[in-house]
Image 1: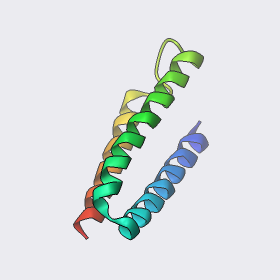
Image 2: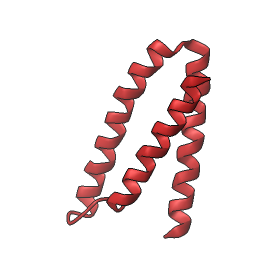
Image 3: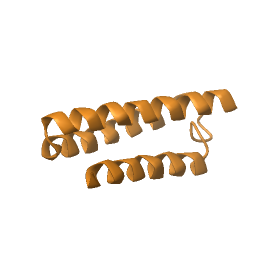
Image 4: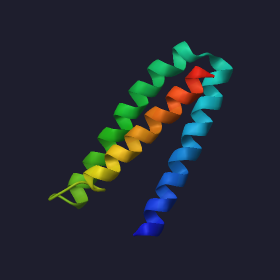
Length: 82
């Protein structure tokens, strides 16, 4: 289980890095709106799959969900400030 979570966080950080590099190249005004739409779609897909395969709860515990969201927000703010 720990290996799965570690892999998930690693992939999430790599994805965030790719998005921020992409955003730097094409301009932040377009990327910011697309990221919001994309994030909503991803969250929707994750929770839909979680309810199909685990009807009693989330894919990951709520504390981990909150940590992931805060890490993404923190990274986004840091990159946007630069």
